[in-house]
Length: 315
Image: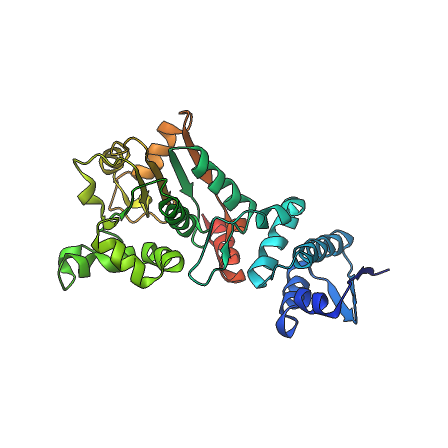
């Protein structure tokens, strides 16, 4: 007997189904169920009762968000499906309660998964937070967004963004152009977050005034960073000495966020990753939070999480 979900209006039904039925199509493929829509009713059926219930839970919880006047897209459906499989779907609506910031168009930016929500809570509560996880988990983007919001609210005086400048065996000296032109391609993910919240023009103005500094990691040596929000990206490619140097730059009134992916280390030979070693050393230090996200926190194309799973099986 198929389960039936009744919806108050055709508008809400259409929002739940998605353009060209893409939300329904994704859920059918993800859970191996059949979903039919007729007017204000949606039915879910299938051979596996557990999967039918999971798909139904996703639809019901997404509907609650729509009924609060919020829009959902395919990424929201994907996140909801992953939360259903992890048994945390009841917390879905909570993810939409609090905005981290607003983008240049006035649209709210929120955590998309429970892992991302915990990550943001830890950044709020701690002076040093590690965000570790695969590509697409939002670890860098969310840290930059939160930094921009703290700057807007005058909780910090400046933002400092950095990452190692040597990756995948390529040295900056072999790249054309001056230092900025050499470094900018490595720092592009950091610029993306700044542009989303502040816009290109304001970002450029703040960089010119020194309020935002985007620089290679070597530029951090010998400095103490007070009243700053400092982000180290791609930290898996730091050496142990580089990581120690960076962490000891933390000054009064500052926050630090260190992001990286332990499965994407590009350091040569037997060089140990500063990220891996620092997590071992600092895991029990009060005031330091270590967030480890996984494929369930990926908010890119649905195939990305499947690709991550496939590679993990081979390791």
